[in-house]
Image (cartoon, rainbow, N blue to C red):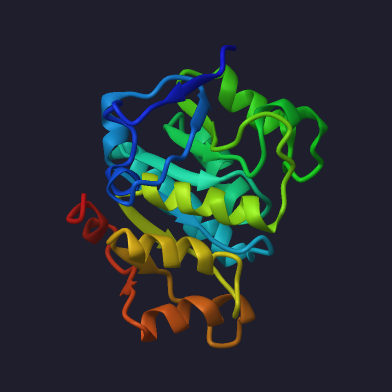
Length: 217
């Protein structure tokens, strides 16, 4: 499949990146659609719990039935659960890599290259990389990936996150871009919810009724 690129003239290039004058090269496999202008990002910890996976499946089912494009990374944990859940209900998703496409089949950091292949082979999915050739994953590329991922979200939902989670950089970028942030409350006994509870304390919306999300699209 041919690797394509979104330039700043494209209606799919995030407005917030244009406004910040960030010259990010956004490459992708698949095809964008008009409905991809409004998306919901679902992100969270790599070490998700049964509760987190259950929330993801429920959210994905609801959003997909509403015709919403779902955005997530392509890492372990919540990310993987998001895209697998979207595939299971024949929904639509956009996944973001933290390295260049040419390293896709060499990189063990991809949780199941078969999942990425499945997404690429389906007209319902798009896989994005904000990197040119021979860029391996690193702390810096994760931050860049997270910034671009946040830019593509109309609304961001954090399902599970521990204290000092890698998800924090996505939330920080989304806040900078003026995106609404929802956090899923969890058990007070779960360390995987300490981060989301902190986000709620700092002003994130509590995810209660799923209909609340659609009001922000």
